[in-house]
Amino acid sequence: MTELPEGTEHHRYLIIGAGPAGLQLSYYLQQAGSDYLTLERATSPGEFFRRFPRHRRLISLNKVHTTSTDPEIRLRWDWNSLLHEPADLPFSDYSREYFPNADDLVRYLGDFARHHQLAIRYDTTVERVEKTDDGFLVRAGGRLLHADCVVVAAGWGPPNVPDVRGIEHAVGYEDMSTDPADYAGQRVLILGKGNSGFETASAILGHAAMIHLASPRPMRLAWNTKHPGDVRGHHGAVLDSYQFKTLHAVLDCVIDEIRPVGDKYEVHLTYTHADGETAVMEYETVLRCTGFAMDTSMFAENCRPARVPSGRLPATRTDWQSVDVDGLYFAGTLAQDRDFKKASSAFIDGFRYNLRTLTALLRERYEDAPLPYEKVEADAEALTGVVLDRVNWSSALWTQFEFLCDVIVVDPGAGGARHYQDLPEDHAVERFGGESHYYTFSLRWGREAYVDVFAVERHPQPDRAAESAFIHPVVRRYRGGELVEELHLLEDLLAEWRRPDRHVQPLLDFFAADLGR
Image 1 (cartoon, rainbow, N blue to C red):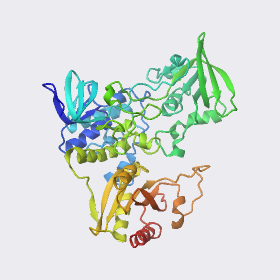
Image 2: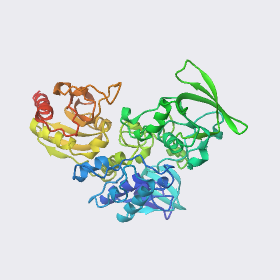
Image 3: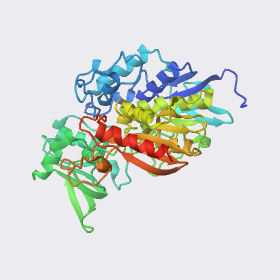
Image 4: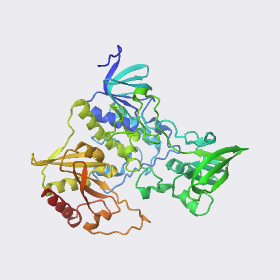
């Protein structure tokens, strides 16, 4: 045991940050009766959203009107509510707009924390996190705390500044003016082709004389990638203006240098797809919209976590734990490296489900609480019912497509099967790698490289379900860590997978044949 200084405060879990992820995890641990404390440097929750996005319009959907009255299904299109039961504090009570204002989210997060009386200590900056033999010492707000486990839910830290000669002449997204009139008549270069870049371009489109958005790689359009963090359709006016010859442009290029010349900037660039062509362009303003990075300044040398190659995010194991610091976990937007640019772990509508699972994994490790599961009959009819009930109802599988899955472990000795919900598929394969017979099922998109995603040739025959382009159920059979069989069920426009010929019978046949071996 580590010898602790007198007066050291102890908690089983310390959560750093009271943004959406910190609040969601706090809620789950509180509901479980766990010993936790959340530390927040600001005076209230959601500090990041008091400033960002700069133009105050969120890209998270708030679809208030749906055809379903089921609260679980409605969550599929409510990307801002935190999970809680009873669901008496929905985000739709704070905004009816499809793309809400960030100020509404700030109000919601503050009310959520107060409504549930979460154990949050505000005005408490975490200065140092050190690893000990049996946990962590955390220096915060002039006090010393000890914890068995630390979960970092602090969100983004400093801006991500690319290594470009003269980058100091670019005004950062965090500091730029949001008054479109300040760019009237100017030639503006925006570094970055993500949503912050397009948000900025959209805001000044009717004022700037010329807007160029630049990055080395092609932009990723959300309707192609299915990832909500890629460029969204409501920025289409910027793309229209490029194609309609207004001199606004989207450039794939490397910025070699930004050089001030008088009251302008000469920008030297090399085009990515033009046989090495170079150019020198003149702009009155250069804006940097290249995202943010993780803040590692709080970590002592003995627990500074490894990061992904870009350095912007921590590298995590299949349970959201640091790959090299035992007991250090990450939550929220920082915990997205394993489904980066795929599912929604960077956003509330994704990580709220991840954190429900993380709570179960933490309690299993630190409180000896078994990972929950349900016992089901190991016959074709029962398993078909389990799969179809879940894929037609679960908002977790819907939102965290291709990442979270349910698992059915067949146990011949016990004469049945165990059904686990909402596990990352890589964690499920790692966890049940010693089992000879188990299934995962999840929702997946077709991943063909379609020439036009709005003109896809469809083949509505059950035996061609693997060619489905829209989201659809996929069942996988594993033996140990080996994937041995996969069944796709046909896509459906209304996401209702209940048709006897297209969904029920193919799944019955699959399980009957497999269980009979």
